[in-house]
Image 1: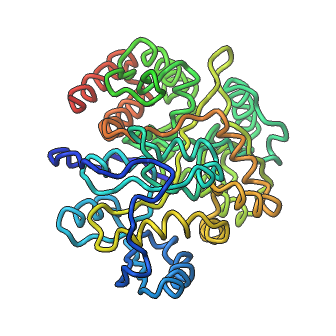
Image 2: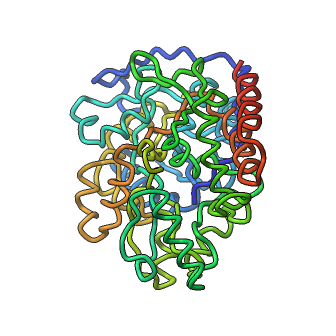
Length: 414
């Protein structure tokens, strides 16, 4: 399950790494990976480690080297940045694309060298997500976004608007077929990631964009009139309003409340599907609806990727592994099987979508989503925004609350 907190902490006192590698179409090193010899060390989380090991061993045999895949079960990004500073990190690390700004800021990763035909084999949004300051910094393998998961036994037709969803949920409560209108996790600290589709539909934004489409940390939307209006709508759905959004719906219980048939609607991602299937619930997956008369709800689109450590001991071998081994469909399929999320590699998606119709539905739900910002300034968003959301859901004044959150965020970005 993707849970966004303030735990991603950037160490901004380090100088930005000045890399000589470009984002061109040809490898920048003349060193043969086989000639490099030695050992390639890969860090990943527990789920991905098991799937990676057989492919890493194959790569090792083909290149006459030893490959170790090491599991880092907690705070992988923070541990990687710290180890990189100390010279004890891996050669390759696997993680979310929104780590990129922090890792580049700390000089922890190098640009990745992919040929033009290799780039074109991936989902265009996935490539955009791992591009930072005009350079490609990772090779994507999976994508994820939120959608509306619906109990079709309770609600046969998907709601077209938030208002339709609320009406259906209230009817089910009145009929005592459900105890909650919507399972959208908040908790006492809020959850910026999960509320974002409603925030965007109501007109709010986090960052503007520059002329080339990159997020602009100087254009902060939090605290501006658009965000105030958005939080007024969020507040109207809260505990003192419609009772749709509640702080009692948390990261720990949102999926379980849905699988326990206590609500008919769940806003979540691909990670929720296994539990839904296990519960034997008849379900469908559709885009998160927006407010009537509002903008289209836009979830964040996240990407999981492989990165080359800038201070790794075997960088030529790491580039070879990431550019020419990770880009093979069989590895992407194996990673999908370890944790079912839509593969970023088009050929891999084509292989698995026939047996998993949910993939196409999640992809459609994220079709008009926004790439989760990977700029370092994003680290300042999560905690103040989430706490403002929770406060407004609990009945706090939307204008004062989000204006204060915007001031806090702006102060951290400066």
